[in-house]
Image (cartoon, rainbow over all chains, first blue to last red; front, side, top):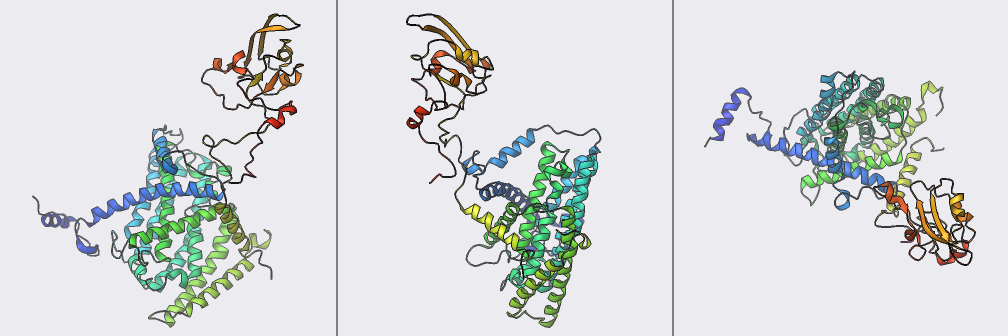
Length: 374
Length: 160
């Protein structure tokens, strides 16, 4: 029988246990890595099912209901089908990058969950730069997309990848600025601290504009409709993954919905109060909030038509970027004015500022230097 | 002040889709729930009345696809005995010209639309497959039997 402490000490000689691991237990990383991977895969399956079912309901259809009770095994059947399909490599493809791209696209999605708290302290690593970690890691997915577009040896894949890069890089800025407001309010970059800070009031009430910016920008960053023009089936034959088939395509699909899980979790954690909530266990509260955000995302997808590429860029740079800057400045002033805790009468002020800014932004919003009236 | 360009359209659209979400599903699940098709439907089969048919073979001559095969022998009372009467529904285009051309109103279109088979040979309907005693004839070109048939079920005015 090996004493676990001896094993840990032996391990620590090469990789010292980080002191910010909650509990300082040596098995902590193993348990939580397993939990996170299983959580992501299960959530992706549930999200795809919900997406299909709810989008069908929005269209007054029934949706998948053949495979298993209420069609819950539809995605498992689809995954099996994809596993058995032939993986085709194009002649012009750069094979190594072509194979690596799906992995580069999907792996960061799992890594992001390392800093998401499911309960007070129940997370893989309580990094003190949590938000920064999330933003940095989730941006790596984009490199996978570009690798896919480039290595396919196909100009349409390349175009899809270029559009996607353009969108993601543009929307990164308002999203980062919106998150900066949250970080200032909480006084910390650690997601766990941010959630603890929301025990009194969720930040969606204090920061409605930040929430709006993060939601829209997040939808654009993960290529959700109405910003899904980089995967527009009718325009550029599914964008960057035109040449992919079989399991490699499934990885992209997984990555896409994994990003959706990540974005829902981020919004739920940063603005809706994460695991905070009365009565129910904390992890259940987090799940409920994730599903609420997911539902709103599906709702917007069912409603809004796809935007044009110039509209997409104009929305990011001419509407969301200035609003995010103003939001940041206002939040900074408020945090400076009341360093301890924001008084409650800040809430109506912030909502009024949000309405005024959105109206003003819409009034001043023009496409193509005002020459094109749309 | 008009609010047309301030996100009001988005809110209106969201309300529309939400209303769609809450209302009754417009589609039905096909194999479990079958809707009653139009009374004058032209199905994928023919319905044949043995009593009325005289074996004149007008239907076979009219058929633009030439899929009606009829063999007769002389019978009594100005009639032929129909020995073989076969319709290859695999080539049938459901035009209904055979029904329209029949001088003795012995031929009707049927209701069936689920006659997919694994072999082409199985698509050929024989004489006994088409007997009017066993099949429901549709009112196509025969509006006189309209009243005996069930009314068409439309999704738009389904009650439950």
